[in-house]
Image (cartoon, rainbow, N blue to C red; front, side, top):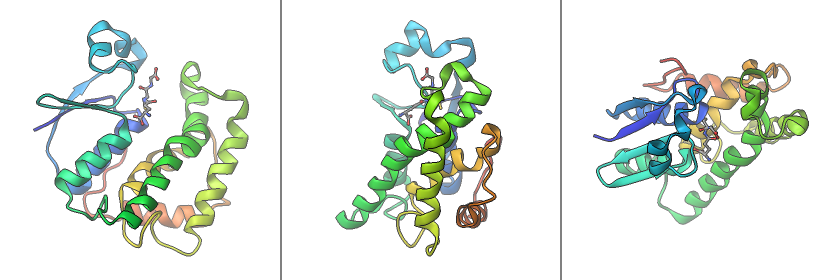
Length: 198
Ligand SMILES: N[C@@H](CCC(=O)N[C@@H](CS)C(=O)NCC(=O)O)C(=O)O
């Protein structure tokens, strides 16, 4: 069984907990309090020099970065559904994982940080513009399809859901984004779905 270094309110950790819950994967959690600076201690930095959550430890294997962790869990426990092995499909999923790491990160994710934890927000000045761009791109993508990357749920959906679902924390309204709201309902209807606080 692997260990997840986790903080409940951290969106990148929630991505991992969500996938584990959808797949019914058991694991151990080790709490790290970012607000107390526990990610900057020598012990934690030895594990992850980036000083960030989440981190997954499985015996000698240490994986940092939420998307690397999602891919590992999906492949190890979820067959090929959540992270496909066909190259064309894999490329589409990877493209949307990158969008979660960049467009969503600089947009809705940072809008939430700006409101709740401003010292962690990396682009406060551009956050409104970036949020509008990210929401427009996801709305457009979901206009005539049910899932972000393929015709079934994948890690691309799991990677995008936390920051989009928590938009309200950053005072970002989804009123003008009906396709995103319909997609969020579909994610929430998946067997094993869990909210950010479980
Ligand atoms: N690319 C990384 C980003 C990780 C990240 O930004 N984690 C946040 C918590 S959600 C964190 O540890 N922030 C503390 C910091 O950057 O100092 C990932 O996807 O895991």
